[in-house]
Length: 293
Image (tube, rainbow, N blue to C red):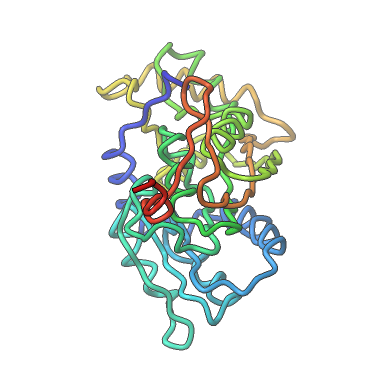
């Protein structure tokens, strides 16, 4: 995982630009969202505060408000234009709050969240210890974390087609389920359950996939990407290589989706340190008065 680095400013810019076009291309996102909502059935309490991290245009936030009508639902996204677009899904009958913030630095009090939901956002965060550490910080003990993210086989056909053209990274890399699970355990999350699903979308031509990725803001943000423009000849070689992968007259694109849930640990539960040892965490209030006078 150490060589996995994303350009955060570029991620913000890509998604900001895609705010107006996003919902024209989010068929897969809606499908994954429906499966993710089923994971919320494991949470049997009545939540007071629910947050949607990487809320995008707010479809998921609206569904959460529909499900938890009495809860305070907060849509969090790092791209302000996305949150502006999300206003259309926040009705006066079922409103949700919109907050511009990063997933690794949530402007919320410790242990103040009952349900933390995130649909296809975590793949754009390269610091998993910071991400899941923040989830643990804001979740109440016994609170539910439910999320989906992309796995490494996502867009494998496009990656292979580009590899025929040059050796530069043109497609963002995504982390393996086992790396994600280890990071969840290291952060102290309880009883994580992860599953992998594969979706294949098909297109009339490779350009249609590239247009969709741009419309979603899901273009390459790898910090090792080539900064200059891709030459026309290399682009044509990539298209030719992708054309050779046609199946039944259509261009396939694989999306590997990891869905997961876990629970907020009790306050003071030790978490694993980077050296494999355990670090206990207690609030200062728990320590006050414990010393002999």
